[in-house]
Image 1: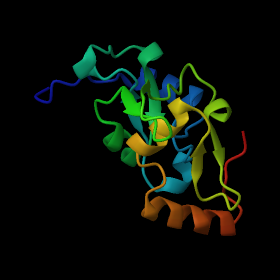
Image 2 (image 1 turned 180 degrees about the vertical axis):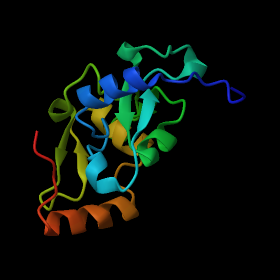
Image 3 (image 1 turned 135 degrees about the horizontal axis):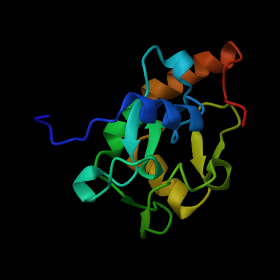
Length: 144
């Protein structure tokens, strides 16, 4: 392993994927409509001391995972205050986010939610365009 990242054993990966409902914990994109396998996200990144243990792992789409990187904190655009990013394992998505009326954007309801939307660029143009198509065929927004 030259990258310094721990390998996630297949059984552990499957337990995490099943617990996550095979969806990104941040933008809720379902693996079935992405065209690629979701990645394992270290909620507390390994570079920040996070371990490769089930309690620190969740599923993320490639884009959310790349934008999150080693971040654990972000700035709430409403208050400017530094706040922890959303933890999909410990926090309820609906407590921090909601869908826009047309179902194409994720709206942060709390400081944590707003900071996460900005830090992970959850409403970037290419994904909102895809969501618009998904809405049109009844795949979006996800239920639950």
